[in-house]
View 1 (cartoon, one colour):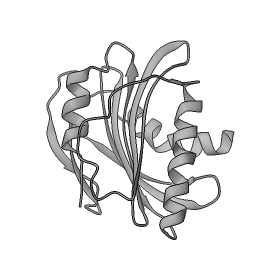
View 2 (view 1 turned 45 degrees about the vertical axis):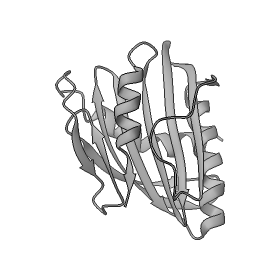
View 3 (view 1 turned 90 degrees about the vertical axis):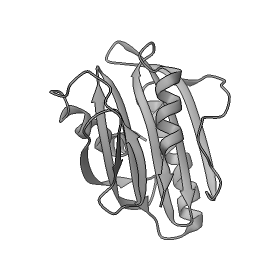
Length: 176
């Protein structure tokens, strides 16, 4: 499970580390991945990375764009799996890995903003946890559309992940 945990979060961490010098101001701008599988509003200039990740069995190339503002990461990743069933199973593996990375415990919340029509399956997470002695909040929507999977998330200090940012970010995400 450690291998799974590390490979799912690796692109997020790599992108976050590369963003250390970004401006702390929210400057929402439309962004997309290089393959144009989605568009989303990010609060700063994104960086992108592609990594091989192990989704509890299948290894796939996951492309991710992310930006970090004042220690809060906004990221979207996407990958294509062998078939629809593998894509659906990958959501469970990603969700488990994300929660394990922060020792997270899910909290109840209303459904995340944004449209989910057209997805084969969605999994939403709102969790509190800790990493490196720091209390964190993770808000994520994991979705599959045919063979493609999407990982849309905000990860940061519990008090920095605001409902306003959740609304703007998740409402803006559109698969293409």
